[in-house]
Length: 138
Image (cartoon, rainbow, N blue to C red):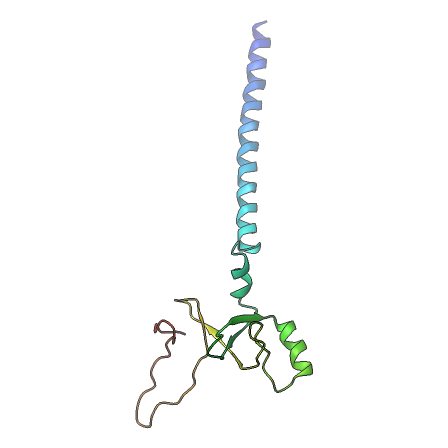
């Protein structure tokens, strides 16, 4: 009878140990899945995720009354250029083609058109800065 009790305790101890190990393994697997999903899955920013996706081209409407920021995928831009070689895409808000390729400031997150002006003769070039917030840009 005593041997049965000891054997039963041994089985329970093994089962308890196995349950703990399996629980830890399951939690580790769940954690790895969450980390993978967060790094590869949706960013959770809704509409802003597409707006700031690094694979999309950024555009800014130059109309003073509009100034709409928009993006186009490379596929959309390629399809547009097949039919309109020397034109810029129209602004989705005002429908005018007074648009320009833009960059995005990492500080204020707004789009701007980079200026490529040579410095006056004999002067060193100024580091580029965002026209919206004035902070240096890369």
